Amino acid sequence: MRGNRQAFTIVEMVVVVVVIAILAAISVMSYGAITRNAHITTLKADLTASSSAIIKSMHEVGAYPATASAADALLHRSDGVRIDYLYDSEEKTFCLDGSFENEEYFITPDRVEAQEGSCSDIDFVEV
Image 1: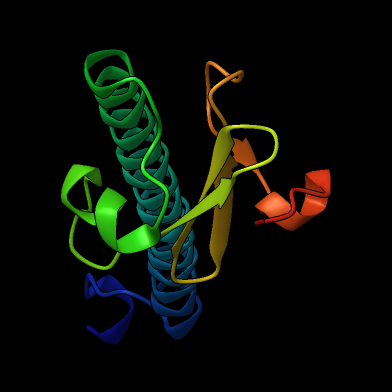
Image 2: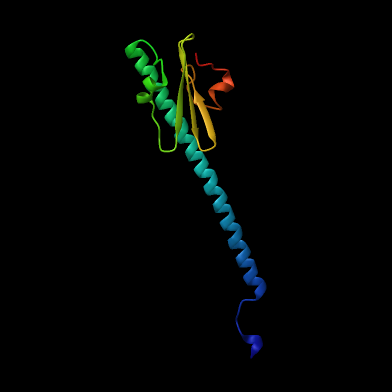
């Protein structure tokens, strides 16, 4: 009677548990990458929107904001995004440094898209 009984062996059970563990590990790793990409996209969008607002203001007023506090109202910041406005009064230009968690990007008026790094990477000096 014992030989006719239908049941899973311990080996089959271990194989099923291993497959489930592998699938769980893959989904956790994918979630981390998707979340990171979403953070980068948010940061770059905030930098681009902020840069556009500052450039638009310059066309209306005739000059870029001279101080960070003057530019603050023009900056678009999503939750968790930090953006710093740096102004070079000699060159009459600006650079926006943005960060979100461990990601850092920057944008200047002559760049169409935010670049990885910071304003100091391009030797931007606030004067």
